[in-house]
Each structure stands twice: as C-alpha cells, then as structure tokens.
Length: 151
Image (cartoon, rainbow, N blue to C red; front, side, top):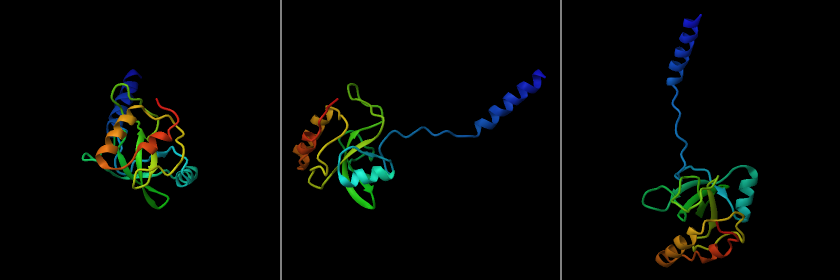
C-alpha cells in the first residue's frame, strides 16, 4: 500500500514537470493591457465596455516602458498617445508599485485629453516629466497640474 502511494506521488510529479509556467510579464511592452485613469470620454467608454487599451509602441530605445515614458495605445479602434503614470513592475526605492498599469491619454503636443486624474501619481513623475518637457519640446506641465494627489 505504501509503495503504491509513493508511486502515485512520483508519477504525479513527473506529469507536472511537463507543464511550463511562464513568469507573469510585469513590464510594459507591445500588447500589454493598460488602465486609463483620467476622465477622458474615450477612456471612460473603453474601460466601461471592458476592452482596455493595449500598448502598440513604447517611445524609447529599449522598447520596455518605465514611469514617465510615452506609449502609443490602441483604444476603441483608434491610435492615441499616453504617458505611463503607474506600473506593476518592481520600481526603484521610494517609487510606489501599483496594482495595475496606469496611463493618462495625451494629445501630440503633450496636453492631456481629460481634465482630472482619478488616482494618485508618484512624485518622481514631476522630475521625470519636467526633464522631458525641456528636452523634447512637449509641454507636460498641464498633465502635472490636473493631478490632484501625489504619492
């Protein structure tokens, strides 16, 4: 009886060895689902329908999105640009880790589509976006001004 129990345990472990469990990808890359956290009309409709936007392209050299990076998203059959304001992936010290990948939709010149951001955004985003405002020419100060809470 004991040997049959041992036999079943070893057989079950052999069976489970054939399954590969992939590590959950916590970085922003192509086809990553994102959550719109501003009050823009297109963002509210997409989130209400249960069809969140997906990342098409990350505007940096590595192709992996970090906080403050600009991304191109597909939302309700349209292409829009957005800024990453909260990520699930492990962050540097003193930068909060969020439960979802949050974005704020923007226009080409850097002005936000919505008038309010519903979630707190990291304070490190102030310094990141101010540097990008000076170097790239886009104006992200409006995005910082509509944020009501900082973490």
